[in-house]
Image (cartoon, rainbow, N blue to C red; front, top):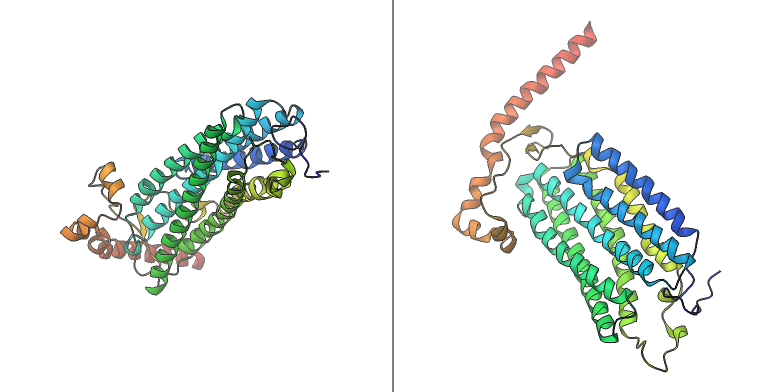
Length: 348
């Protein structure tokens, strides 16, 4: 039983639990295996392949945590475990960016931003967050480094956590704006609603985890470990008790992974980005899709294509206005034919 007291010689502060890492390593392996099967079954590697990778990061991270539990003075095991466990959550959020982009492709005419730019913009920010996370975690975990470098690591991690909080908030605002536009214009399709609900729950889970980590590192930042008057018992309970990590990191992220198993995006979203919902809110049409007319760097700098709006270029991308009527008519004929065939079959 934890008593919140410093264990002499432990890099972790406490003596790590020996059973919990085994449970979570097996649990993440199981949910990762399901994600692997789903990616193969739905042919959705591009959309959900990150989920498999995130699970693998946690599996390896908990394996090293288990090894560290039997030798809590080993610095290498501590660094590997910490770095891997910090790397996975932002990648789960990156997976959410993919999914939101795919939802916007499904209802493109009410999207606040070009669907493809959701990925390029948020993914670029995620790369910055991952760089800050990796560098900061490695600096903090390596207690043999000078104090000023460790403090730099804390600052980098805090910056990453704050940036992630901001990005998640903006991401949720973008998704909510899109949904309000849909509702206002009579689009209340189950595929849109269920996909967005999954994103809201997943992002809320990640947001709680980010808040926990932010509180932890802001407390660390105010602590001078090199001071001769430093007393480990004065540290925050979040640092002194291991159960905080297992509740707000390991369990929350496991719940997020299982959520994405149960409510897999491909249960509702079409395989192709060219399939979109007609403005009648019922018919699904295969159209020409978006054409990328700008290079990656221009898209990154101006994700909303404000220059295109000024020049009127954005109007040329409204393929649903030109092809929608033709496509809808064709789809309605197909739907009518399928209905007639079904009725004929039932009559026979």
